[in-house]
Amino acid sequence: MPIHKIKLCKRCDDTKTKDEFYRRRSGSDLSPYCKRCTNQQTVERQRKFKQKCVEYKGGKCERCGYNKYYGVLEFHHKDTDKKDFAISKARLTAFNENVKKELDKCLCLCAIYHREEHARTKGIFIARRSQVRVLPRVPFYLTKKKR
Image (tube, rainbow, N blue to C red; front, side):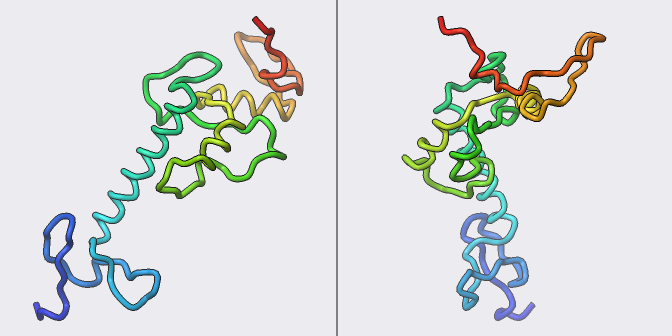
């Protein structure tokens, strides 16, 4: 293979063909990391970011207390009108004050309770233990009794 068609990945130290590297945003050069390493870094960064978000919100579902795997936990905005951005769509590297400010507008819910909350706000029927009932349109966090 001609030398001008290969490149060394700085992360895995493998020599690969240039088509195994992404172009930089400027378009003038190739990334120092191969596509595989770049993708691995992205996944690692996103997992660390989510873990920090979950830990900031208490590390468990605010409804049932589930805390076994943070990948099951999701963020639900209490008021969508006050939503600046979706935490799940954030492609951020820094866990900063803007993220904390947005998380303060959210509930940390497991996937099941998050789906139920969306159903509740839409007034959808939910079947449970052979009963079908209409849930009130009032979000659960407005109906909690103060202790």
